[in-house]
Length: 199
Image (tube, rainbow, N blue to C red; front, side, top):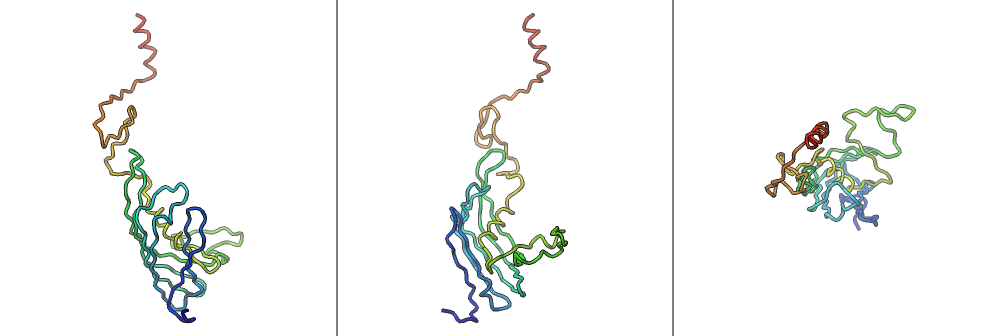
């Protein structure tokens, strides 16, 4: 059992809910000004319901943890790989993740900096990296999951020139040479066509 002044960072695993692995960093054990933490998360840790992405490789977190009073700053990197479906052809494609971390954690019971007496908060650009912890624990799994969400493009495309699906046969135009002819007819001309046929 390490002594009270050990430089070891303690991470505990609590029984997760369905499909949700929780890796907790016990910040009450932090003793030094700066502590180093390295963690590896298996893909199965992130299969939670219907995600917008799938984790395809172990995720690695390397970070330094700084504690200033009750404030905790986490700086480092998250690396891994996810996949999602192309918005045009619906095929899965890979997205490598190599994201820098710079997060400030405040106790959940503390008022947010800049909050007014009625509880409203003006969020400044510098405050966007602020998160919260409770019970002296930070869920590192949530930190990694957030970086995966931030890595998702607003419009996922397997490639810039993706040709998508044929609206007639549904074939993937990136894979097959579709011969379907899509002809658009102005509905206002349908009545004229009918008159010509009657003549």
